[in-house]
Image (tube, rainbow over all chains, first blue to last red; front, top):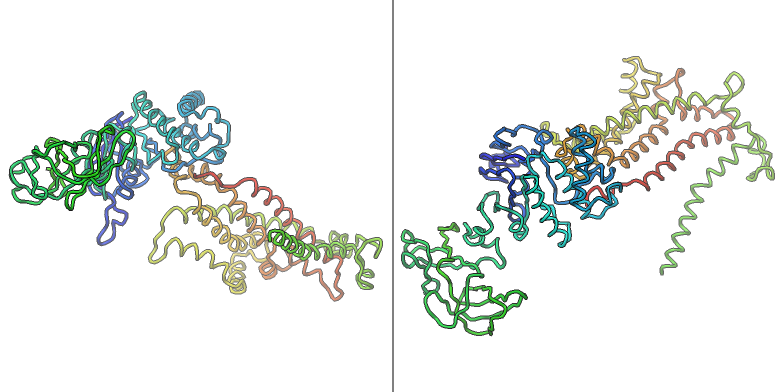
Length: 357
Length: 282
């Protein structure tokens, strides 16, 4: 349990080359004690590198790491008291489940009573109690991952528990329950949890704060709601939400409005400095409504596809060269043909050079 | 089609077994013959074809003073040299292999793979190339014709085998296993012997087996580097030969020379099929 500060961290795997390539570009961030963080981003964006830097498996090329204001940059992993769970289960296959769970405590010379108590508590939470005396290698893949997870949670005094896509191998039902368990554990023990994933739903449901990364860069840190409604870059707009945000090439026409194919769309962003410039307009499909009549902020488009997802309908409409997606109530009667779509100004995000204005 | 395959498979196995086992049976039967039975007619079945005698075996344990050849001492010499050299090779080789598998070495143009190849290259070289340097080296340090000298030379010969097998083995042990151990609070040495090593027992056994086999059967260096003080089994067995070939005692000594390897093979086979690495990851 600690506050984790990452100060001006950057990392390159070839720092001595003439043109080093950076897996992580310089950034600073603070992970508050007892909070849950999710690091979200596509594969290869630097998420795992970031975790390995915090756990000490990788030493950053530049920058400092502080646990509760104490500089740990040069401490080796075993001295940092941190737990990390990898994507695929790692178990000590020559030991029993009990010994696997007890291993981190034994390494740190805890008393036998304490070890017993903690192993019992963790194995109850993860429903591993009935397997404690079995050799760990006899378990199934998801049970093995529970052991990995259990080893991460068995120490109460860890600075943080870092999880690198830990639920990939676990079936959806158990996944849901485990996420809830992790939340409970976090609330009960005030452990700082950091969770790496490329699944936005996992990130959204798990974390207080989401860190979105792309190509070694932190693009946005915020609450799930912020990421959804006000993505800071078009990448976040594309990456978060299903379907991705609608993004239209457009041109600033007046102080508060842009033009898409000569249709004027009002927004709440002040665009006075960008007169006549090309910008992008982003709007979530959830916020686009079907209306009967043409009017202000409506777009006439031809509906080409209706997909019924059970709880909503996804409309795909064409307007000249643009494709517009809209999520509507499943009860809404709708047929293929021309429709009018209303774009609420307060939900519009305008991007210049892919960055939110 | 499947029946034909099965038929061919079993035919092949049967022929192969005969091919392997026949010389042993021949050696067993010959070891109980005397001069007469060997030289008169081709006979196979004891008591029926010939009268079995223990002379071939007895001569091996008699001291030379009583007309024997005494292979007991060379036998124990061989056991001592092979086991000691194998043990040291495994310990050193495993440590070297772990380092080569987990850390990145750079010295000029030399990289991990080059170092590994350097170890193996010691085995690729024809032994004759090494014989003179070894001879000079041992005579300089006064270990020629001694057990310790042989142990030193055998370590040089066996360690590459251990390194080679263990590097490959450690490369297949996921790095996450060490990393997890570090995170769980081990220092790098503890991570090695508490976590990685127990997972590598099958590899250690294979490496150990190869070391024992290559150590046990070596004739060349045992022959060149020893004279009168110390003798190893392979040299002694060859020395049994004389103008009249004593087929009976040669057979008997061949059989007891092979016996330890057969025992090792059986034990290892049992163990290897029981314990395997499956399930350390995924």
